[in-house]
Amino acid sequence: MMAILARTARRCARMIAEINRIQRRVAVLATAPDRFVPGKDSGRAPQTYAEFLFRTSGGLLHEPAAAERAHGQLVR
Image (cartoon, one colour):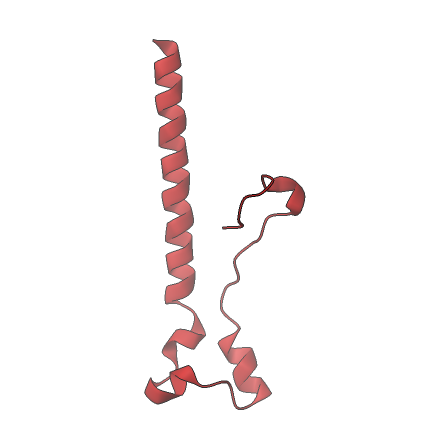
């Protein structure tokens, strides 16, 4: 009985962690400056270095160190 409860608790914890990760990713994408480039300009490359810096000034996602990643898995 305890094993079933422990397994269920681990699954719930993993699910909550995944939802938290997705929520953070959505927040980063929703507030990225590149998202607010007007209409036809959104597909073109930045014209100036200042524009490039502005577009890339959004939040960056943390990539875990190689030692922290499981062997053969893709980085999320």
